[in-house]
Amino acid sequence: MKTYHETRLPYDKKREVLWATLCKSYFQRQIPEDACVLELGAGYGHFINNIRCAKRIAVDQWDGLKDHVPRDVATHIGKVTDLSFLEPGSVDFVFASNLFEHLTQAELSLVLEQVRTKLKPGGTLNILQPNYRFAYKEYFDDFTHMSVYSHLSLCDFLATQGFRVVDCKPKFLPLTVKSRFPVWPVLIQLYLALPFKPMGKQMLIRAVAVEA
Image 1: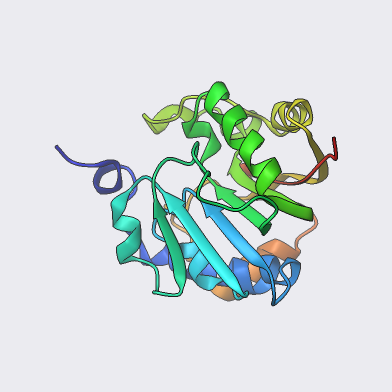
Image 2: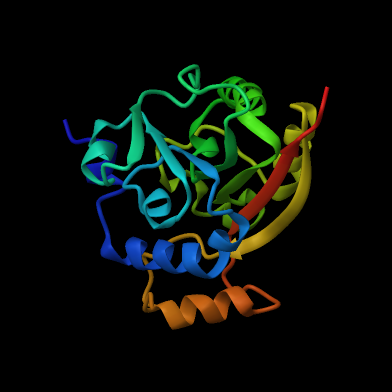
């Protein structure tokens, strides 16, 4: 049988252009040179490969991940619900893109419980994913989507799990690179600079763990 990556998410060079630009023009400035960065559900490694920091860790249950990241990225093949391989208080920046909608709410709660313990004081959890409020027509075109979140419901859920949201962008990016529009760095940079986001259907949420 064909896998998810063969059917729904085949490799696309346009995603590499997108993520290289996003990391350089937006995310990199939030990450110090001496930071430890963890990507959950890393897939093809587009984000983690383009971030520069002292230590990079990528987690995904897809064993193809190891074929798409360089040797200096510590790769862990396994479910994101088990982060026991990480030392407590060892991570500065946790990133998850288009991941949590694939988990049940119970699984997400388990992930968040572990992320809280793995983050250093002041470390952040950064979530990019479809915003159901704006992407409801396409949301379940992906047969592996299990949970529904808008920017409001996800922020509220994070608060119940011991996180404080420090930034919420309801419309950060369009839903997909599969469109008639070209994926060029200059256009991506221009889009990021716009005060409004036409076709914005993915939200970006940044949160910190609340001290017990």
